[in-house]
Image (tube, helix red, strand yellow):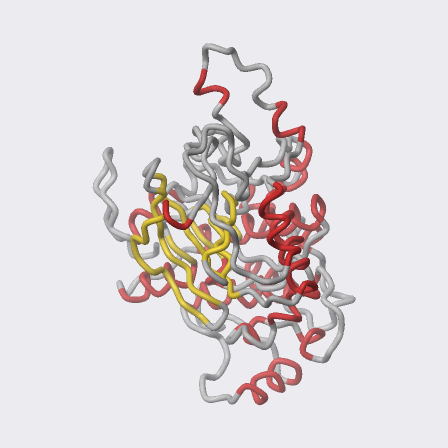
Length: 389
């Protein structure tokens, strides 16, 4: 049985997030957004509630205040949960302290921030907002879906608020970084990433894709190494998925660099089927395994698009000791005809993923692996970088 199917049957109620509507015990109301157009502001001010979320805490004893403050923090793969320190707070810009900038692109910036009243650390993404009402309705749809996502393979959404003319989206901070930063770190050390670890990464990504598609009818649309993150416990998670095709198309002019991972059918102007995420996964895993972009670096943007459509797909060098199962998994992911390419749920049945799913944490210790990558001292053992990380 695939992990994705098992997880779908055991889904907990979705996460409750307070979105700019001050609770009774809040010290002061949230500042009014500065946009001139109402749809997104109306949503942020409504503080939507899903009754199913509240049912999680209805059985809590009146004397057990901590139990009532627990909300739907996504389960880790081993099922543990932690208290949510933001339950009784409205997120406001004046309560946020920037710790450091994590990344910057044409669509906005991502920073590590601390919620000063609680000391809780998050990742905050600033997105520039078009005042067009249609665009804001699409953003509202994005936030609603983020709010409903509840999976160990998807980063937690904590809330959103307006900060000037930008939307600030607060998400789980995954201190292990993105797969792009991880493989660059491994390359700097002159090491490599083992096939067993690559299997666990592929398995987690597919579980996330299956969850998004089956539970929320969402296609990721922007899968790449920088949108796969890892915690210091070794949990692999997806972030920055595009909920709305219209929104993705609206933002296409501002996003730079994602054409490397675009499937041929999308380049040729077709619709975005769920199989397009599988193409992006295959390309992403080739890049992580090789620790470099698999395409020639001297191609101009239009030359790159022509190359992706017309040239043979990237593959692992024949003289490197990768298994036949891993090579076949990648080739199945990157079948150019999307009608013949498997869906995320179908590729979960590939022997490479099935074999990975039966390996226990003792067989593949992802926690020890990511701590070795970043030289993070463990209380139990002092990490060292093995020959193949």
